[in-house]
Image (cartoon, rainbow, N blue to C red; front, side, top):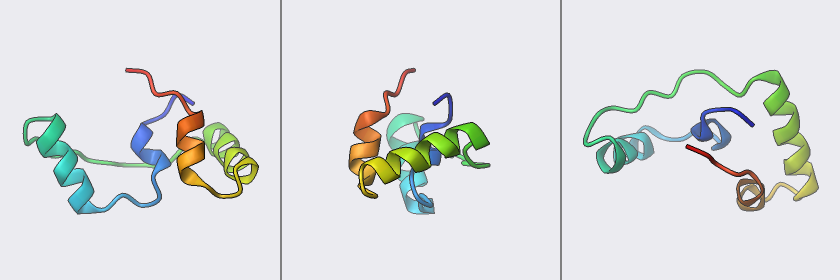
Length: 66
């Protein structure tokens, strides 16, 4: 997947984004806009099905690169 990793989280809250902004961006606000592209959404759904809806296992499966 070549997507914003935060798009994999089910509806990240404003407080989570604010906390991440403080910890990672030195207080800069993180804006999360959009959704997974259709191709990534397809693979994400397949992985959720493979791991019986266990998001942690899906996230462990996906490799994040910077």
